[in-house]
Image 1: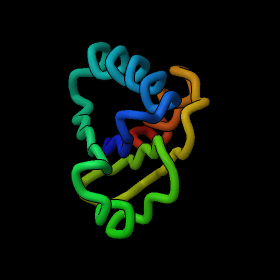
Image 2: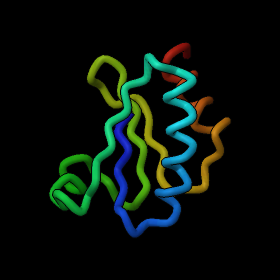
Image 3: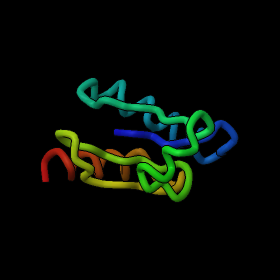
Image 4: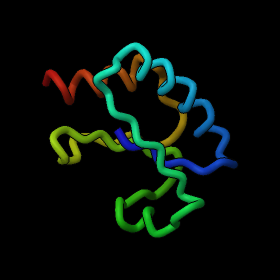
Length: 86
């Protein structure tokens, strides 16, 4: 899972807390935090149109995307389950 964010994004901070919990509960999840302020070119390379953006990968292939910071823990967990288990 790739988490695209900026340090001044309020919704990014909310999602960060949820992702911390999910990763602790599911140690098999690899979580990459991608600070767009360090490389604005990432937005174009990965098609990020807003922050936060979560991109879910399985075996190196994009399988899902969630944009915006108003997703619940259950919603994100459900997306992970959908990707892993169909």
